[in-house]
Length: 77
Ligand SMILES: [Zn+2]
Figure 1 (cartoon, rainbow, N blue to C red):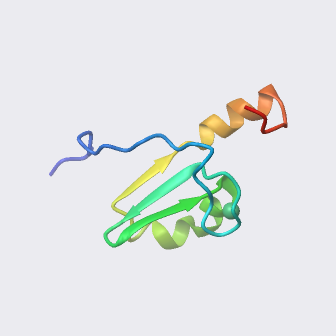
Figure 2 (figure 1 turned 45 degrees about the horizontal axis):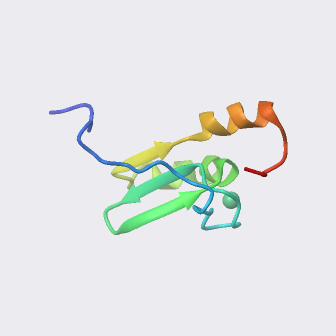
């Protein structure tokens, strides 16, 4: 069995990607057999126990959120 799925093409999340729950900027993309879900860092944590069982891939950019948080609180970019 293969441990990594390095062949999976996952596009970076952008400011246009929004959390399916609250509309905040999404930092986590959850790929499911039936489609995709986008979550902000808050809701990714909240729903992780549910989607971790069924997700085929989880693209997590919450590290980027932490980096940007240190640069300023505004979303002007
Ligand atoms: Zn959210």
